[in-house]
Length: 500
Image 1 (tube, helix red, strand yellow):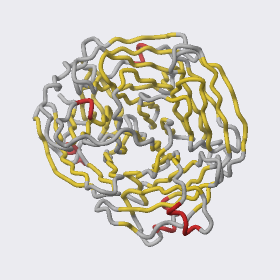
Image 2 (cartoon, rainbow, N blue to C red):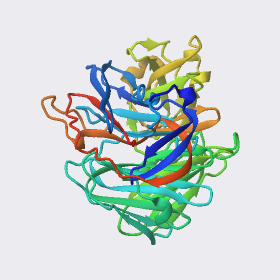
Image 3 (spheres, rainbow, N blue to C red):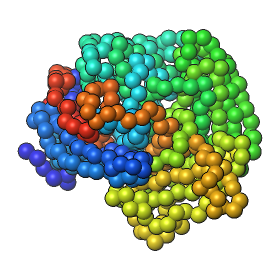
Image 4 (cartoon, rainbow, N blue to C red):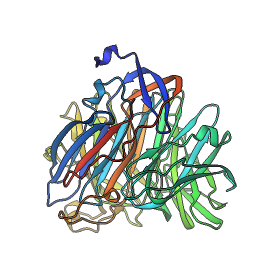
């Protein structure tokens, strides 16, 4: 029997390895999936399908994302009334391979999670930051995005690149199926990195959680030798401190250089370390630094971890982004506020401005005033203080970032050289923060006559509807859910609830 949220006292979920845990409700929260349509010449057609394991289709809906706008799915509108649902997964399919999709919602133990849905078809995933300590633990959720059953394994490495633990999936992972290794039993108490390997393409999320706090980042499937770090905290202003964890994604040891810069683009310091294959090193942020560059001799993977007094957040470092559209930003929206950091990787001054749109694609307010970002510098603006939204009490929508080489007079900016700018987005509510980076647009469009297949989907391996505290455990079989027929049309969202 379903009850209202006020009367939900205990909830149970079937975890991905077949362990049933009874949880006490901490606080209801809304998990959101945001999709950005950055194109200028076509409305994005979408169809959403929400499933639970036992009962099949729960709700379906169709929607559109107009050009230059974001669309917000609320896939748990019905499932939120079901006391047996908490842990979910989702895939969103589209005939475009360069969309930006973000998930924002609660973590397992009262924190806030935000990460990007990944599209890439890689069989190795790198996880630069994995912990198993008295204070913090790690969940790794792995989704098979291939079209065949996959053999999956995880190897854990210490900072020196020595393998300290391993896990092999007990059975092949079916297309679309998600599994969670038991990191706490496989990894000694330490800070480590991990490499996920499979015979089919994968996506993965890495969640770090502790006492009333959590953070998540998407596993790294596309590496580079040059990465950008748009936002760092040096511990001076608000107590937040950032560490950048860099993992060697190659088979040979390599030297990795990290260069730190101030918001005004002044060089602060650099540090070079040698990292063993699979190993990881944590670069601490020096006083005065707010952004950085990472330069490896070969491919590396990196994640930024920022810690405050009672919360932390993480984001995966990426490449640069051309005229990025951020699909979900907020001002005083149910307590949420968003800040955005733009890094200038160019050798010339960068002129940046931004434009807000609602879910209909209509512009909200006027274009912002232009700001000038020095070479190697960074600029952060907060929606709660942005004069562009001074006449808007609350806002939930999208924002488009424009970045050009600075021209004087400013009116000439339409003919200026566009800068590919790294972007970091931080959402905050009640003192807790979650962050995501906006990566480069990769690939292009598919023909609408082509069928969807697992490899063409954006994967979200981990979505919670609530935050919980665990109370007890018992064995329960894993339900079969890989046989759903989900070929539904040009765009769809598939969410299934792991429940008994």
